[in-house]
Length: 79
Image (tube, rainbow, N blue to C red):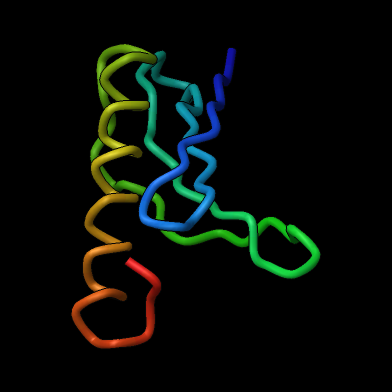
């Protein structure tokens, strides 16, 4: 079963998910809601698989924080 949670951070609304692979492990996937229409956009898929839903969701949240920090550093973000 896949699991997704909404993660607001630095003015962005991220969708972090743990998607179950055929092997039984879980992959972290990061999306965000793009203003102004809240369209969902794919950002990143972690190539490493985690052993649990919790591990994959934590990895997706970490990817969101990293992504937002990069945007803030280059002046393109609102963080």
